[in-house]
Image 1 (cartoon, rainbow, N blue to C red):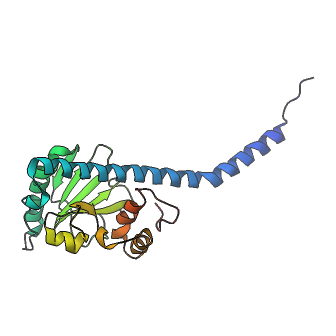
Image 2 (image 1 turned 120 degrees about the vertical axis):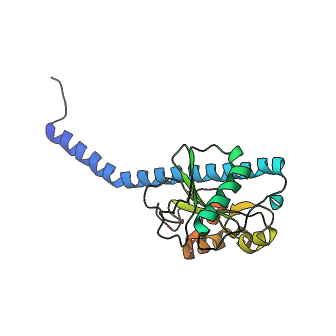
Image 3 (image 1 turned 60 degrees about the vertical axis):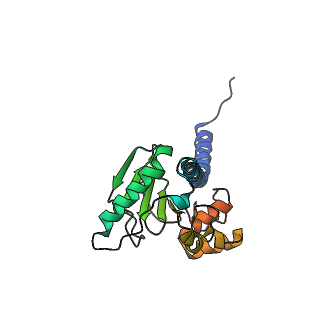
Amino acid sequence: MKKGFTLAEVLITLGIIGVVAALTMPSLVQNYRKREAATRIKKFYSMMSQAVLLSTNDNGDPTEWNKVAEDSSSDSQSINAQNGYDFFMTYLAPYIKYVSIDKAIKSDNPEDARDYEVRIIFSDSSVVYLHNGGCLDMVFDYNGTKAPNTSGKDRFRFILCTNEGFMKDIQGTTSKPFTTYNVGRINSRDEALNYCKSSKEYCSTLLLYDNWEFLKDYPYKL
């Protein structure tokens, strides 16, 4: 006589598996998003740092690069778009692999107080928006135009300064032309966490402290 499972036993087992899957799936999805975000942000930071280093070898110290100041005239968007585009194409594009670049692109992030006039799309669909300010402001979106398009969740701020005065005022340091926002004035991981909680533009600095990993106390859900 062969023994087997009854229909009731099979249904109960499947029910238990379903409950366990329902409980664990959100956590698995969340962990996957964190790993994907961390990988892409770290890749972007490494790529840009390497590009600045290679460009320095070819074009001299970044303080010697020709960056046009931010324009504030009535036609500022198109002027800054052209100046930001020219700067990127001269000093960074030769050292970066990207799919496309557009000028005069309005950021689709409602949190942005200003427009980011240049948009660069990478092969993994991630995007960086550039603004020709006192420095070259960068907003990196690791999942491109997909939601939520929100600072601290899928968008993270970086900055490239070529003027020592701006380096001191905006970055708080003159040791790195490309870095996260105001990194030189944040002296500890706890301080970076508090800054991130109060202003999302500092979250990239927190991630820099954490080696681009989203730790359990990261204040925003991806």
